[in-house]
Length: 541
Figure 1 (cartoon, rainbow, N blue to C red):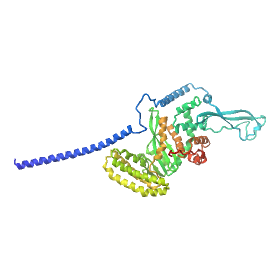
Figure 2: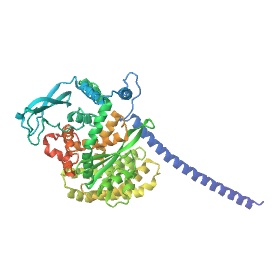
Figure 3: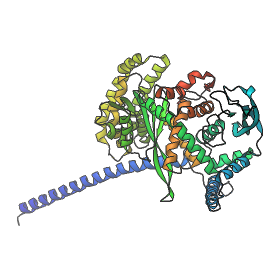
Figure 4: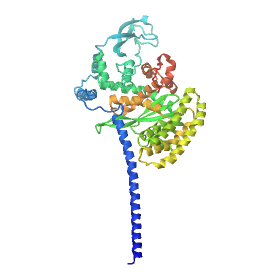
C-alpha cells in the first residue's frame, strides 16, 4: 500500500474517532447537565426538609420522652369513657323498666338534686278572674341554668286554680280548673335551659372542649348522672332548632356578588371500616357583608359541591379561591361566576424555590411585593374603591403585565419537576385570574380572610378529634356558620345564642325576613350592648 493511501486511511480513522468522541462528549455533557439539574432539585428538597425538621415550626413533633406526660391521655380516656357509656346504654336497654317516663323523671331529679335553686318564676293564668277561683295546687317545672362557673336550678311555678263555687259555670272562655300554659322550651322534655344549651355549643365549637370533658366540668359543678349520649341528644335537637337560621344565612351569602371559598379536612367516623375517614368541609364567606357559612356534603371535595351550591342560589359575581383545580372545573363554562385566585398562594411557591434558584425566586417575590406595597399605600391613604381601582390600573397593571411576559420567557428554562419550574407554572396558569383584581377596587389580592375563618375548625379537630357521623359533621356546619358570622361582626356569641335559642321555638314557620333579623349582622342592630370591643392587635376575620 502506498504511503498516500496509508495517510488517507489514517485521516479517516482519526476523523471517525473525533466524531465518536464528540458524540460521546455531547452525550456526557447532557448527562452532566441533567445530573446538575437533579442535584439542584435534591438540594432544594433537602433544604426544605431541613427547615421542616429543624426550623421554628409549631407543628414539629418532639422526640419521645418518658418523663413527659402522655399528651393523648385525655383523648384515650375519652374514647374509653365513650365505650363504657355505650356498654352501659346497652345494659340499660336489657334491664329497661316498663315505666320509661318515670325513669326519665327520676334521672332528671338525680341530675339536679345537688344544684341550688337560685331563681323562681311564677306564671299566673292570663285573662282569668282569680277572685272566682281557689288555689288547689301548682305545677313546678325545673330547668338547669348556666352562669360562667356555676350551674343552678330555676323553678317555673304555675299555680293551679279551681272555681270556689263548684255549682257555678265558669265564665265564658274559661274552664273549671285554670293553669297558665308552659312557655315554649328550646328542646322538648329537656331540663337544659337556653343558657346551658348555649354554653354546651360554645364550649365545643368556640372553645374546642369535647363533650366528655364538658361532662367532667358539669359534674364538678354539681350535676350528677349526665351522660355523653344525653348531651349529644340535646345538641342534635338544638341544631334542628337553628337550621332555619342556617338556611337563611346560606341564602344571604350567595345573594352577594363577591365571595371567597375554601375547604378543610374533617375526620369522620366510618362505622363500617371502624376508623375515621378524611372528609372535607367547605367554607364560603361574603367579603363585603362578612357573612360565613360552612357546608358539608357527605365529605366530598369535588368541584360539583361548590357548583351545586352556586347554582342552587343562582350566584352571580366574583368567587375567590386557592389553586384547587375543582373550582376551575366547576365554573369553566359559567359566565356568571368570575374566578379570582390568591396571590399569597403564588408567593408561597416562589418562596419554596428560593433554595434551588434564589435569583429567579427573588425576582418573582419582588414583583409580588410591589403589588402588595401599592395596596398598602392605598390602605394608608384610605382610598375609596373607585380610586383604588384607578391606582391599581396605573401602578399594579404594568407590574403584572411585565411579570406575565417574564414568566413566558423564563418558564422554558426550567424543568417542570424543579421547584422553580413548578412556581412559574403555578403562577402563570392562574395569572389571568389574578388580573381580574384590576376590575374592581373591592377585590382582594388573596383569600387570607377565608383561611382565617377556617382556623377554628383546625383547632377544634385537634381537640375533639373527629365527628361521629356524616350527620354530626353537617350539624357542625350549622353552629360553626353562626359562630363565625358572630365573630366577623364582633357579636358576643354567648348573648346571641342565648337569645336566638329562646326565640326559635316561636319561629318554626317564620318568613325569610323574620329569620334575617335573627342573623348576627342584623340581630346586633337591636342589641348594641352585645357588640364586643375590638382588642388591640387582634385582626378581624
